[in-house]
Image (tube, rainbow over all chains, first blue to last red):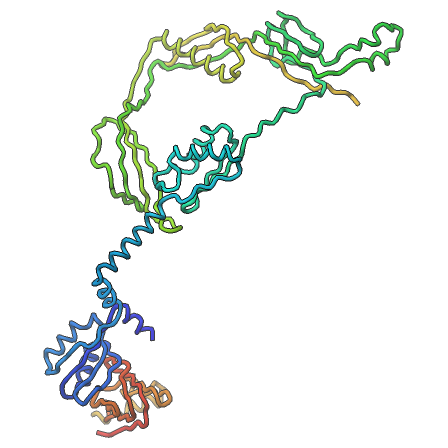
Length: 409
Length: 93
């Protein structure tokens, strides 16, 4: 009875027809295309039957031409059920509020679980998370994405080697891996120290090993600086000992030394005479939208701020209901005022900026231990509004490179 | 004229084995046990009560007798009757 189900959805009524030969009225209805079912004869002048809710109008039209009397005796189907339900205001209100409550509860954090770290760090992480606004009871859609939280947490809790932030429904899982300071394995392997770069040695301090160079010596890459082979002292007085013996008396150590040398670099940089940059002035305005698909409904923050240039930054967070993510997003858009700046400079200024830039670049390459002693402009030229510079930079840095000694066994 | 048409139609059904209910415009009656009766291609209701259903057809009436009749479905040319059927009778004009 498939058709009966569809009738229950659209709704149907039971009508009682009174008059002589009441079944003829149903025949008239059927002829007009109204589907009639469950027709029962109650009496000689009474007949009952069901018709669809949508056919009532047409049925009344047919009745007007006849002398039958019609009463509605039953209302069935969902339209009537819903109407009956809607009449009970407190019930509807209660249902609405309970759905709303569930909706709100699905959108707050219920639990923050931290695992994989000892108690003290756990507390520290917890404190940090609270400062980011991640604690039980916080809104889910106001949070940063897990990757951003991960990065912030790694920065703010130095004890963490790695933090995995995962959000599952209303629970935040945080897995941390503590940094364990591992003592570097003692490099007791015999080794030599050789030069990594060419340069003039400025400082020499050898704590282990035999020095092969002196201050102000010029070295090329690969030159031996400190040898890990010590001459044996025990057998030194016995001069007539065989060569073999002497060989054995040699002691192999791991050479240790600190050798700085004056090295030099040629750096070329290009500096434009004119350049543009954007700057955010600090004025900003926040807007909130509800977003489904391409449609955005503004819910907070109306009107465009009267900034000349606007930098827009949008963050979206999905709303959820129970464990499901709704296709509705709360989007926070930050409108920041920005200014375009155009700067032009003279050749001298450009050269100065180029030198600074080159020094910073070189310092980054060499690391913090290297000190830049002096720089000299070797060559400069202006081409297409750009200054090309070739610089000579002299640096004092550690040039030691470890080379293991092959014991030859 | 009508008689000539009738003969032609009978001929058609016999010679080309076309379905007789369509060609002859006669009711097709399907009976399921004694509880359901399904009548297609009738010309309208004549009498209906708890114990009797009389339908007009092209060449007379079909009378169905029984007890506790309910018209389960009514469409322009079809009727599904439910109840306890005791007899089906064809009445001439």
